Figure 1 (tube, helix red, strand yellow):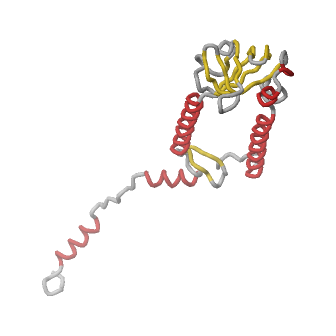
Figure 2 (figure 1 turned 180 degrees about the vertical axis):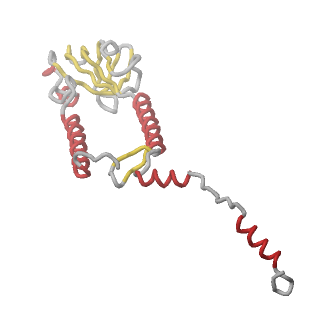
Amino acid sequence: MPPREPFGHSGRFLAGVVLLGALLGLMYWTGAVGAEPLERGYPDEVDVTQNRDAYVGETVALGGIVVETEPVVIATQRSGYGRFTVVDADESLIQSSGPLETGDRVTAFGTLEDESTLVAERTVTDRLRDTLYMVLVSFGAGCWVLVRLVRGWRIDRDRFALVPRTATGGNGGERDSGNSMAPRETPVSDGSNEDRWGRKAANQAPDGGDR
């Protein structure tokens, strides 16, 4: 008999619902909370480009595309306008390796030194190759885990759980398996019946009477 679960199927189902709700809640909370210091509370490129003088000396977060690398210059507009020189962009770069390149999408956080210069404290980039590498690695790992799960585990509908494929459904299955694998004994005749009938036939005459 399989071990009895303390809370049964309903407890297992309730635990799954609670864990799923916690996962969704944490995902929503992570998306709603801004990453310090690159959060929306600071003036961004839309605010600064409209009135640069008003934000000189202020802490801002400017997002744009790298158009020059020595020094690093970003354009906050796709047309190439709204340019700012970012000082210490490569030194303050986080979550990426290597210097910035032309075409990289970056967000620089720091102090606006003058109308066109930002002294960066932190710089975050969103490179296409980094994103592609992360997606490919995650996809490959997910496929590997899925294959291992399908090949090594199965769903036990009676217990509402994942069990190894080598495990049997119950004691009855083990008994049946054992009986099917056990060699069957073939009865061996001692020849007594054959000998008796042979002697009786030999004593009978050809016309059906006894000798």
